Image 1 (tube, helix red, strand yellow):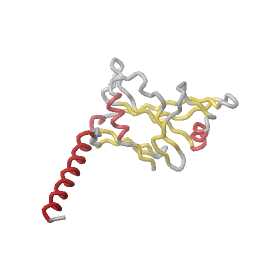
Image 2 (image 1 turned 135 degrees about the horizontal axis):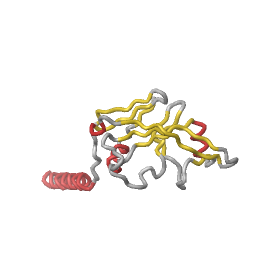
Image 3 (image 1 turned 90 degrees about the vertical axis):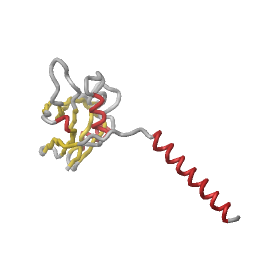
Image 4 (image 1 turned 135 degrees about the vertical axis):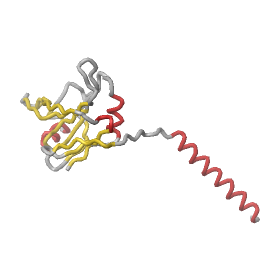
Length: 164
């Protein structure tokens, strides 16, 4: 090969590489990064949850999840902590961010399909864990698609729960 041919081959390869990189950069779905400057901290169970600036002034609702052990129909319950957007009103309720708290033993029972914690045919999904607890999102928590469900989905994509 002559030096001129080598230059042409290199130029073609560079153009192909640039074309491939451009294609992937244009077809990749952008992930919306929300600036987080608000943080909910729960020292009782050991986790923090990063929230976007728009959640400044959020409130926390503490409720209980209920479940049944399938082998003997024993009922059980545990904490469900919902982080509520400050614009939530009774007239226009917005999507909360519910965090179910399970002991490690309870979580293992859910994974083994011995404990059911909802009417959905699937169980909750894990958000994080520490040495004592597993933090999970209820199945079909946004089933009704209330105002703000898209924002909550974007927040959850950022993996905002950090256990300690």
